[in-house]
Length: 200
Image (cartoon, rainbow, N blue to C red; front, side, top):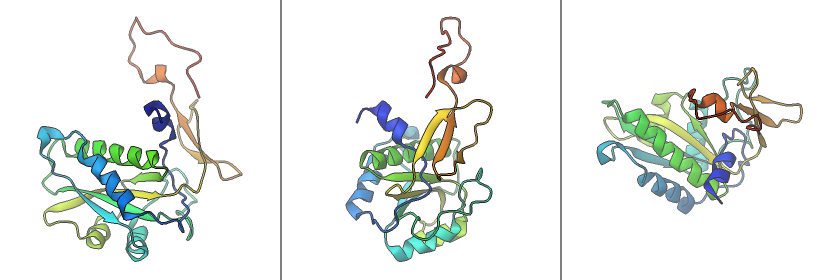
């Protein structure tokens, strides 16, 4: 799969086929990809907690908050929940570059998961205490992100953003994600002309 296609297909999935479990070797391959991600001064300070068993997944799920724009939706129902998680932990004594390192590692993880045929969702809103206890976060470390994983159980449609950038679901349950056009995210430069065909 070309990277441009992989980038388009790596979307935030919030409903999964919960009964399809991920294998340990799959999860470890995703973490192994993140191991090679660039990080500040090559310090390699991040630590990754892998959650695979049903029992451990059940401990993680109640600590998560899902889809802020879908105000009436409280999260995936039983049967639609992730079948695995990876928690990215970083030192409690945060450096200016810590969040950048975490973000880069997360990107490597979700792209690796998508290439292998799995869906993912990067979750930043969660109960840190519950997560840290559930995954035995190392001493002097703190969970920074939770990445939910599994086989996608919903369709995500990219579309051109007009006035509203909030994601939404239609009457068929399809998830729509508006994205700004390329020209709208470029700084104004004389040698760059707007392309009216720049849309999904």
